[in-house]
Image (cartoon, rainbow over all chains, first blue to last red; front, side, top):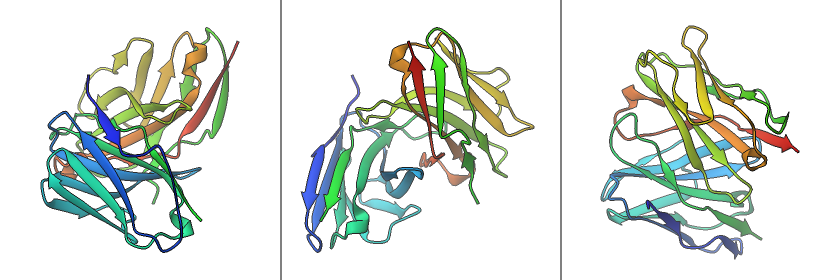
Length: 113
Length: 117
């Protein structure tokens, strides 16, 4: 059974804290993604990675960075959390190729106070 | 410009009836793929169905079918014989193949479906 796991389901952090969200997939997928989901806006891509140590900005990268040191792990970093980063964060992975679907983790609901 | 549009924020359907969720898209890439995902209240995104732009036939997966009208740039999801467990948010998404094989998806805003007993 394919699996994408995220380090926390719920997280509460204070403004200015450095926040790490971890994502691990066990399917040997080349591509990994971080999205944030907000009501009425759907899913918006923050960053993605198509290989170890390779990353590309998505649509809303400001205030975020990522790290992919191993193929199975993709980390999202909020350097200095702000209240407008309160959101649901979803990680996904997929194989290379145009018709392959993305597999999603359960999501992390982050609240920044 | 919005590339994926889902105009129905919320919909109701009676159990056992069919329901159509609308999705229109905009792309100049001749090669693309369209996906539908389901997100129950638990939060996980579940892949439902895929349609490639060059596929001749509409995709079907069990009770899900995709009504693909290329000239109108629409890719509506049809759920037949609705069940209470179909109550969820549904997202339409597109991948433009010109963006390479990185698999980047563009999502619509979502439609919340409630199935009434």
